[in-house]
Length: 246
Image (cartoon, rainbow, N blue to C red):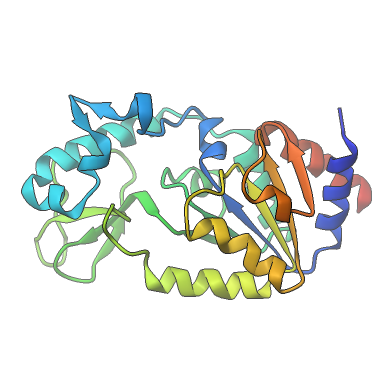
């Protein structure tokens, strides 16, 4: 069933001059990606949130990499959902200009999205602890990956607890937000800062916020349109409406 809010959202998307999207855990959840918090937060009796720190890596890099290898193995088995593929199609067709994501699972890239800014990093990306080398794994890591340039250890290129977000990525994020007249907010709880405030940058510049989520969030009152439901079901329906509008 297509609701009036879906039709309203499709019209705004169709009229957008420069559109960005912000995605969160809700998109990954529909592909059964574990959150590693709450009930999923224990691995071999270790608290996952204690492993995702610079201190944990410095103390026991082998243990931290074993945890990330396990996570990569789980995610490798996860299937893309229609939200991932619709977002990628919108970019390919020029509907969506840039994607900003809080997710680290790499599923947006697997789906074909290319203009992606991963504010919390990427579980499959690596960086050297000594030099400027950055790489990417095609399969789960085996042992501790070694830098091909200086032979030191590589670490997961994700933002750990106690670390700041990458200033280069954040600069690009704000450039995209400054250019946008529409921001899609897809499957995010709008609780984690600073990402929760990204859509408000667009709003304060006179743009519009379209929120798609299974429930209301702190961002809902500021949204021009809120469509309630699973994003993997909502986005394909809106895509069909866009086809009719074109």
